[in-house]
Image 1 (cartoon, rainbow, N blue to C red):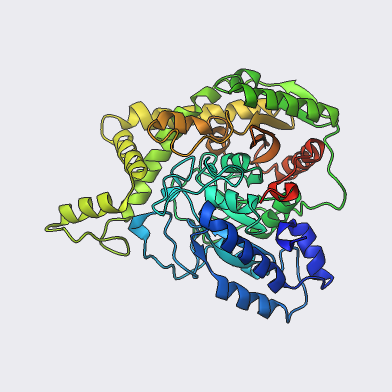
Image 2 (cartoon, helix red, strand yellow; image 1 turned 60 degrees about the vertical axis):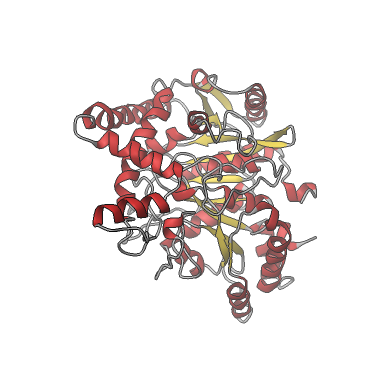
Amino acid sequence: MNPALLTIEEQARLLRSRELAPLDLVDAALGRIATLDPQLHAVPQVFAAEARERAKQLANETPGGPLWGIPWLAKDVLTTRLGRTTCGSRILENFRSPYDATVVARLEAAGAILLGKTNMDEFAMGSSTENSAWGPTRNPWNPECVPGGSSGGSAAAVAADLASFALGTDTGGSIRQPAAFCGVVGFKPTYGRVSRYGLVAFASSLDQVGPLTKTVRDAVLVYEAIAGHDAHDSTSLDKPVDRLATDGPAALRGVRVGVPRDFVAQGMDAAAAADFDATLRAAVAAGATLVDVRLERAPASIAVYYIVATAEAAANLSRFDGVRYTHRTAQAGDLATLFAASRTEGFGAEVQRRILLGTYVLSSGYYDAYYLRAQKVRTLIRRDFERAFATCDVIAMPTSPTPAFRIGERAADPLQMYLSDVFTVPANLAGLPAISIPTSTVGGLPLGVQLYAPPLGEARLLQAAEGLEAGLGFQRLGQRGAV
């Protein structure tokens, strides 16, 4: 079997036994990128020579931890000394970072080998990876469909076995929704559990870095390598990270799974609703107990999110002004024209839309009516979860109300695009850990379910997800021999 199709756990076992060398894995992944990515367009930057050199260096060392010698990909919103950090935007087309993001440095220290950077919605603003200045990424299950977003390049790459794992970022579901669309695992840790240093900010109170992997156990291994306090990030939690990986299979027996039936009944298509019901039956068969919970304010999450996130985006993206390291217009005659023309040329339509909306809700006369009120409702949403977790261990929801949609299908309807994240956004507003795992396929496209846990409840969450994963028995594309 092609070693690129194996999980991190399986690859690590072969590396420790010397049945594989790091260069074998790198060459296998680069071979798949060369063959498949011209159609998928998931990895616009490939560091082939550097990855091979790193693999040769590691071959002279004693195999280390579980990520030693494992090839991976970084979403292009994370700074890397290799290549460019463009955030999928013309305004940063030529930007080269002088430093690695903390998560990149930690994976380097763990012996993982960076293969390249993945495509994304510009500045992580989107749910389909159609908003990239470098063109859309396609779903490996059906190239006519989107891979989800904004971490669509990372999800598509893992689904197509172009790398053993990838990092994404999740501001309102941007790890979990593409994971569901591409049939892989996507994990968003508790806010503050993973450093944001070196992550180009979209919405600073919502952004979180996390892994996209082939299995839950692989997500555990990556999470353990990147989590932990970082003095460079003022929002980083100064709490020890428990080792989560276990030697035996996880179980769902005795786990209380909360189901917010009123909330999830809204907006799902028939296939997604049927799949969610089947997933709950599988959880019960594995020994879980279902508990009805009420998330009264959850339906307001999308409205709250698109006020808070755009307000923070408007503030964060004001630094990209055409004066320092970003795109600079050739048309400017005065300072005001320089700013306006540089940003108009550099930012795509979706980013401009969100900057304008964020500027509006922060403006005089509207701050109290919109931004301040949204923050108050955000607090109420978090309190709803606190009450719900008093009666259950994890909460289950569909990851997306539909399977992946066709490229271009929602491009002219921003509201329909935004509603793709209706079930993922609450976790970011409340700062909760959440994970999406693949469940089944409908019409040749995967669906996913997500589990939420209380803050710092990663151990409980990942164990439950692993137990559910075993009960569902989903087959990845590589296991099906499809790509």
